[in-house]
Image (cartoon, rainbow, N blue to C red; front, side):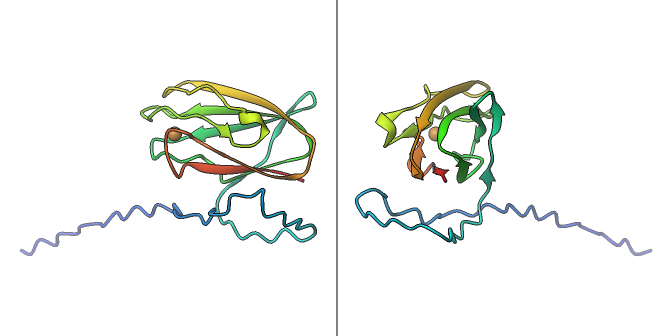
Length: 142
Ligand SMILES: [Cu+2]
């Protein structure tokens, strides 16, 4: 009798695209690129839900030290980012270099923290977790 050992190879394909080419710290360049926004970021784009006139983003910070989206799309006005730090994760925060350094508090795993900002001008506003280099994303106002 031959035993046919079938070993299913469970290859977990994590579609995590590391190495976002967000090298340019925008601001001083002054490239006023209007028109076609053809940035080819394959990563997740987050859209807000409305709370009154406030655009609310529920953004997660993961145990892999990543935000759950690379791009947050909003219109000019008031934006609130609610940072949910996943269970088992290191603490995270959301800090804007621009916008007066607006930031959430540093949020522990399983908790949330938020920052509310008013962004009257279209543009790209990068933000980062100050604890984890490379943990970055950007708010796109258009
Ligand atoms: Cu972090």
